[in-house]
Amino acid sequence: MGLAQYADDGIFAPRKIADVFRTTSEEVARTAGLGKDAVQRRDRIQSDRTQSRLREMIEVINKVEPRFGSALIAYAWYRSEPLPGFSGQTAMQLVRAGRAEDVLDYVDAVDAGVHA
Image (cartoon, rainbow, N blue to C red; front, side, top):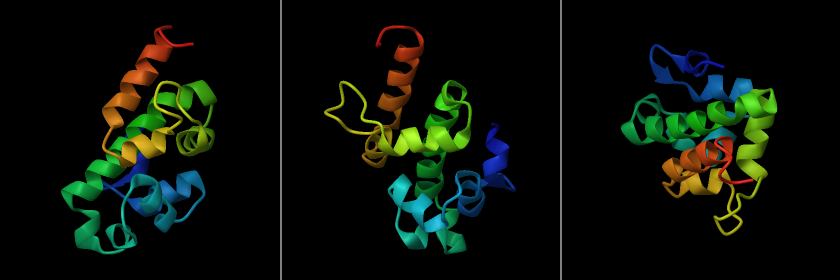
């Protein structure tokens, strides 16, 4: 799915993200490594840090969605599937630790057949 479905007026909207993943805005915040205030206060939603974390999470999920057939299943993978070569950490844990690029590189490598 396109990034626009997760945004309002060019800003990632936690409520829209939560609707797509059938969860709450607070859970989206936790999943992205943000505090509850980051998705409740307008000034915090628009902050660079909040928008960056939400963007990274959505980029990873969008990249694997075709493999799973739905955004909801891709979100479940993001949260729960340990990634080989990352000490059993999930994509969510890596993104929360600031390692979104590592996850995206891993997905690219799997798609290219480097990792099986």
